[in-house]
Structure formats: C-alpha cells, structure tokens
Length: 315
Ligand code: SF4
Image (cartoon, rainbow, N blue to C red):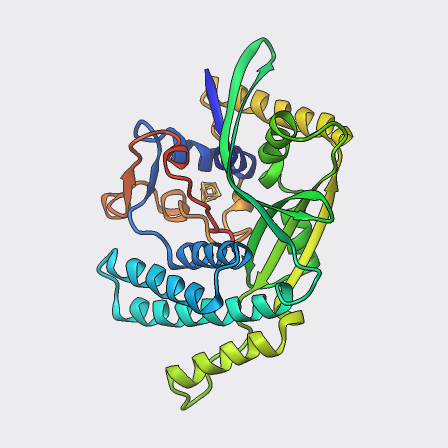
C-alpha cells in the first residue's frame, strides 16, 4: 500500500526529484548528515511558540532554547564561524520569543492552546487502490470556539508573495483532511493559522560586539512586534473538503504515474524558491563522492513517522 506523509506530499508537489532523493534514493531516501542551522533555528522557534502557548514561563522557554542550540552545537564538529552563527541564532530566537510573547500572548486576543500530538491516519481509495495517509499534528489551538491548525513560519520577509506562496501550498492539506475525517464535528469550521515570524532585520554595526548586537536584536523584537509578527487565519469548512480531496487525489495519481514510469523530473523553479534546496549540490554537480559524503541513508522511508520532525528549510 502506498503511504504518504505531509512532508512526502509537499516534497513531491515542490519537485518530484526532491521526493525521489528524500524517499527512494539508496533504498529509503537520503538526508544531509548535518542538520542545517536555519532548519535547527526554525525548529527551536517552533518549539518556543508551542511552549509559550502551553503556558510555560518565558524565562523557562529561554532556557529550553539555550539547551536546544547547545545540543545542536555539540551535534557536529562545526567550524568556528558556524559556532558563532549558532550563538547569534540562539539569541535571535530568544529575542523573537520575547517579542512574540508581547505581541500575541499578552492580550485577550490570544489563541488558546487546545491539544497536542494529534495523530492523523486515514485511508483513501485513489483510482482503485487504497492509499494510507499518516502523520501527526504537533498542536492545535482554539479561537472563539473554532479548532485552529497552527503553522509557524520563520521567514526573512513577510511579503505578500511569500504569504501567497505559503498559503496556497499543500502544506496543511493532509492535516486538514485528516482532521475533518477523524475529529471534526458535523459542519464544524476549522481555522488554519499561518503564524509568521520575521528574522532579525538589523545587522551588526561596525565595532559592535556580539553581545551588543544580540541585545539590540532582542530590543528590536520587543520594540517593533508589529514589524516582526503577522498572523493570517484562513477559514476552512466541510464544503472545502471536497476540493482538498480532489487535490490530494490528483497529487497521488501524478505521483503514481511518475513513480511507476521512473519519470522523476526536476522542477528547477523550486531549487531556490524558499531557501536553497538541501539537494542543490547533488542536482547541480552530480553525485560525486565528496558531495555524497555530506549525505546519509535514511533508515526508514518515512522517518518523520518514527520521529516527528518539523522541517523549516524553506524559511
Ligand atoms: S535542487 Fe532543485 S531540482 Fe534538485 S531536488 Fe532540489 S528542487 Fe529539485
């Protein structure tokens, strides 16, 4: 039976070759040996937002962020420049966390935390064959009685183009269908929240120490929350489900066609669309021993099912 996760569907929708490298190459797919700092920072920000909504004190969240980055620091023999970048990223994340708290959790408009680790697991017949869709929603909130599916986006720029790109992508497709299939009440309205967090807009000044810069970043996040944070709630109703299911069926059928004929084409528009694709070097320079030394085989095809990992590479 074909099994899809949210990540595998998104990878296929972006670029079939990316899906092949991620889920098929070498048996179960390959992945970079070292997690990219941008990805690690996105994950720490995501965890911080989650913790704040669970009611954990910001000073404790700050400690969690420091621990998260310290673990990342020790995970690899990083270069001196990367070690410095990790320090900056940790402080920027802490600054962003305090700014986020001020912007979204200190007023009555705050989104209520509802539940976490919501399993998604449903079957669907696609052109005579049963497919399985599997995953886990990290957490859901509640706003004015409506369940809210939260997508945190850590981004360099909250432009209209970027928002449009994110909100139109199939990033929440499977979760919404799964939520409606498994949990939603009849005719319930479910909201999707795209919770955008902008990366620091200020750069180090000449003669400024790292500590001074980091302090400025934190003050900037707290002082200009409306610049750094933006939320977009999108209303989904049961009637939207038919459209979403049609889209899912179309994706699965296209995947089946490409996979059975081994026609994994490259969508080069996706290579740098939202950050550099993790497989860029392979596609640009080929599978040389030097490049492949930076990758390792996945132990299972859908590792994200065993260890739910939120990827933020595009940000
Ligand atoms: S580098 Fe470009 S072509 Fe290659 S897998 Fe990534 S998105 Fe696809």
